[in-house]
Image (cartoon, rainbow, N blue to C red; front, side, top):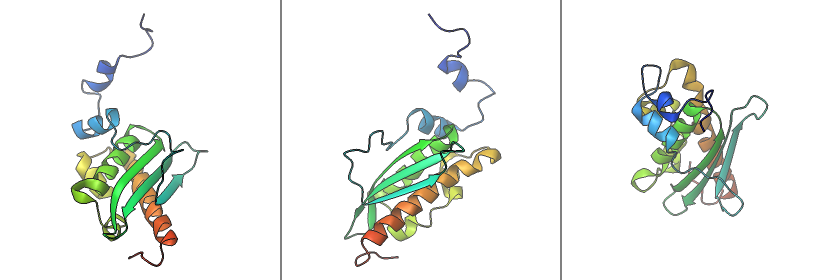
Length: 153
């Protein structure tokens, strides 16, 4: 029996009250590249941003094609809202599509580029796209620190 105080999924995704694009909705309900259990995942670089005290926290794990200096995998997990989930899901797609983004280009990925690919976010949710791009940059810097002899900036 359904709890009368709990809205059903249709009431949350239909109607004029939904402030997000269809792309945001898709990435929120079907996040790409999310990593639930990192225990056995071997990453080349890890980036952690945010604060568990305020509630928004992001972790990004990357695997890098060392020869090509491209991101071949970008996994993530966030403790955040729908905008943070959708933004990071899209960021992970952008970082790995078409054979992977060059590290030097991925370091310059902007929140605006992520928001554009999402079809927009409400202004008050801009900060949600910042978490993913900062965590990606931290993961790249972690990788480069570990591979200083082969890292290219």
